[in-house]
Length: 251
Image 1 (cartoon, rainbow, N blue to C red):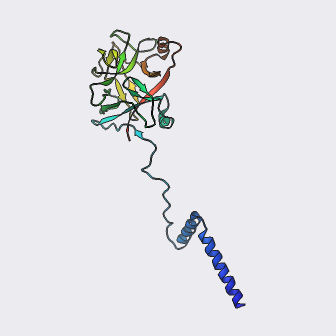
Image 2: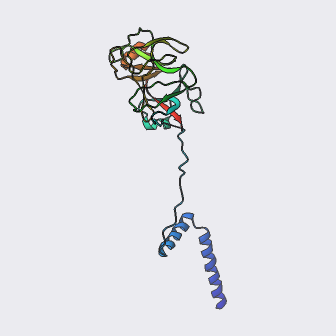
Image 3: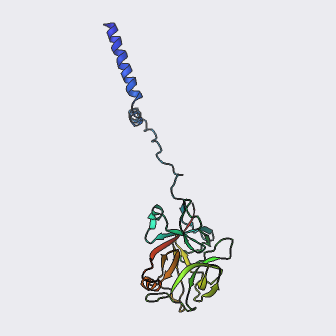
């Protein structure tokens, strides 16, 4: 009987060890925490399931600290993409002659642009191409200097790179005959929101600023006060996509 009792004891001990060895980590952790609680101790620290240093967002909005110089690429997204734009990806980036297709590395072929953050995001700025005399401009082509944007108005702009400079708030445009653009340009017309979204603020000859929309057709970016009028000017067969542009700095 003693031998049988010892055999039974060894069998139970082996079964217990086998069960413990093959228990899931979560089960062992739960049992351990139960034991700690039974002894009046706090639960064990949980495993860290994430890393705060990992992110799938390669680019971010500018910091907009007043006086700081912010540099990045101009990403072109379907209008209304908002916070989902990084998931859906850009339609392209602004380059020397218009929109360039995104590449596997992101913004291949895109130009970098920079601006000095003003005290208020409601202040217009120029967007310079660092290391060159060029800057992004609103250029009225096939027109004279008296260009007004607004509802019912067939005038439109193209976003192009020029060596021009016009003062903030000025209703005057300057004629450019440049490498990347020909027409009448204004340059201090961009506002950069906290999330990096750009708005265009072309000043009409009377000093007014109408609501303005950015549209993509082919590789060109147009600015208009009337999308229907723009469609009529480009032709019924032209494909027009309403877009948003974001300045995206390296994260």
